[in-house]
Image 1: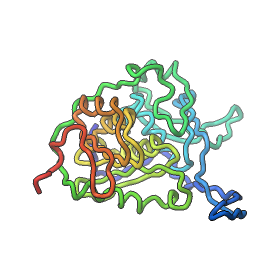
Image 2 (image 1 turned 180 degrees about the vertical axis):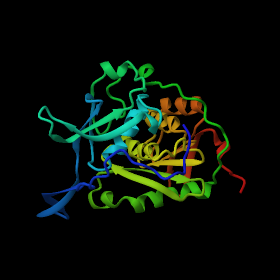
Image 3 (image 1 turned 90 degrees about the horizontal axis):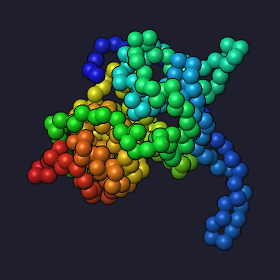
Length: 288
């Protein structure tokens, strides 16, 4: 996988960004009083991902940027490695040849050899699950080359990431129901961010966009997530070549093991001017 600064020719549909918020009527209780009010909630709908017309997964997600979500998901599953594998991304067709809403068909180039799991794995992924269709941890371990310990950032940059990603979360500020993932450079400049009801989906949208724009591997980048750091998120970051993963929440033990094996710097409990470093602190200049 190589980075490219050449103009991009997008084989996938840009489409219109759908409404990611739904209006509902609620009964609100406050200070001993109950009242009826209008409220906004984050949208959640199923997305069926097909590969060459064959259903691979059904993901519960927030509509919008579905092509990025599909690309990031396929990369995380080890089905594709870079944008060269993708011929096109478009709406799936029903038996009569009409486009189907909430169905995305990813067409791969004929020369690409797909894993055998593509033929036998068909699964449902909830918005809270990263790799729920996999039967065992060993089955989801994708071979990841250890990341080089070259990129470096500072504590001042890291403690400022939460505020920056929070400023981006426009839908979260309205609904309180979305996770966010943001990609930053080593100086803390936001490159791209996405929101979704699923934290894994938000990460897949970020990484999928970078894949389709031929900007992998993501050397000298920091991935920030609004939730906890799970094994799946560490794996996704490492596959994309991200050297530093920072999370508002704490990591699991398996996430720490995966980060150590991948030579990834894992940061957790990043909030209010403090954070914990669980693996590879060499990428952080503590002596500045």
